[in-house]
Image 1: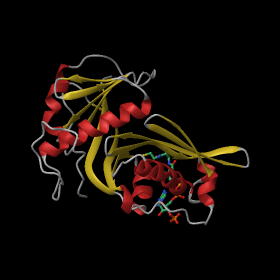
Image 2: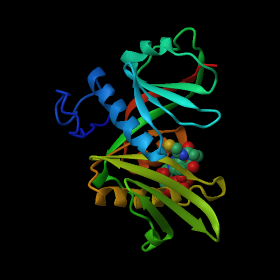
Image 3: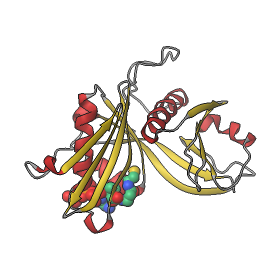
Length: 228
Ligand SMILES: CC(C)(COP(=O)(O)OP(=O)(O)OC[C@H]1O[C@@H](n2cnc3c(N)ncnc32)[C@H](O)[C@@H]1OP(=O)(O)O)[C@@H](O)C(=O)NCCC(=O)NCCS
């Protein structure tokens, strides 16, 4: 697992400045704290405490609310109620579903990077110009349009020294042409210019291939369940 530079924003946390070994229970909670803060900022939604978990008001029909918690604290989720639109995500090695909440919807991996060391450089000189970047406060959205077609996109939120990358995607017809790499390069350049040093994200199986190729490393498994 990859070392994760700490944000330095949490004065209440006595953990060391740099994690050099495997993720421990204490730094898992810190990662959840930091990632949910950036993720909620990226989506422009509210985040509030629910015991040891964070409750993120995603607000879509299929995913109204998502609770995010580190694996050692997952027991708090037994107090949840709701239907299939209430999701919970456990970060860290987790023994299995919490009864009576059985439905695993997907598994991902939390990844991190020292942003200055990622290999986001476009393969074609000048190709960076193809990425259009719109930013509003601490959030930037990158898009790549090819022949008038939106081919790839992604976004990032900068919170303190962390940059949380989100919704990175390339349309199937345009995949494996370097567009994901381009999007990541544009967002990374912007995040670095805003003072971010550490990248954080939760990666799908496809995403893990892309981010690994760019120099990101896995820090924790992530499992998402639905109540209904
Ligand atoms: C993940 C995704 C954005 C990658 O976009 P992309 O434009 O195809 O990525 P790139 O062409 O820039 O790939 C750059 C490098 O990443 C790696 N890579 C990307 N996708 C890969 C795959 N499916 N399998 C293996 N390696 C892959 C390769 O090393 C690739 O370089 P190469 O093509 O020279 O071998 C795209 O597959 C996608 O949109 N998937 C569905 C949505 C999704 O899961 N998004 C990620 C959310 S975290």
